[in-house]
Image (cartoon, rainbow, N blue to C red):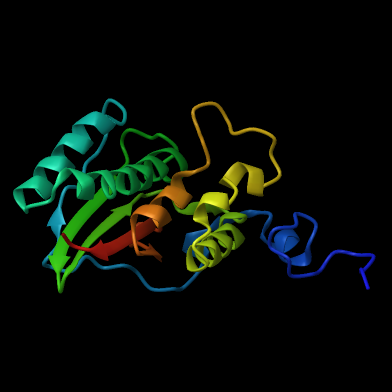
Length: 198
């Protein structure tokens, strides 16, 4: 039997109950989740993009750092895009392209893993991001990330805003085994990217 209405908890349906509840801006400062604190063994590459985001310079720094540790070209090509998308998201969506706000960039090698943390000072996220993360994680478990929608399509938009693609989160999940989200002391978002080291 086919129901005549929408399933209430279908995160892929814009008209479901769950999507209606998340269709608002969320201020991370309103939630008492504790703060991400940087462990002492992390190398700090954080910066303030005074004249705008210079991704080519950041890529050079990341490649140099990984190459010195022994990474080959294949490993770089499977890692750098995910970090760059996290940095772009922090700059564009978190800090709203404010060149006076920090972008946190931390790296650690431990227990056979490489770990990056990228954060912003923004504090708000689009509520649709929450069900989108659930969908992306489910797609990753099923090895079907390539078929996942971009964020703007997921939100029911026919096109992405100028200069955006909506695939940053999906790229991070493709490049890293684990992608975790935390709040920092500034109330911004911290993205923790983890994968086996080379």
